[in-house]
Length: 108
Image: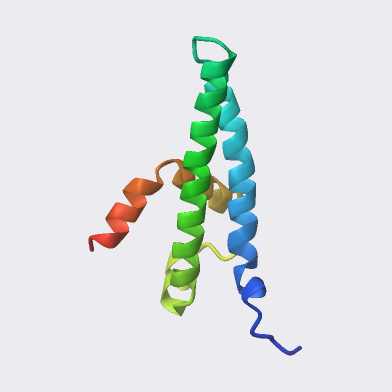
């Protein structure tokens, strides 16, 4: 079997986890926004803010992950080489706390 240098093939697992994590984050955003006091407008703006927050985090983390997965040491060290619930949960949590992860990653 011949391996092609297709960028989408290299991103497959990362994108799958990111998309599943983002879907769950949208549902969590809706649940969190629905608990707020106030009218529809307040809940709608809160939902929008939470979705934009997690979407920005997902994009930033996808870019960082793809950069790191280019290095073989990072993939081996993480131990996450398949579409496991643990990896999806990691993506969900990471999309909410991404500024901490970006700051931690940029200051070794």
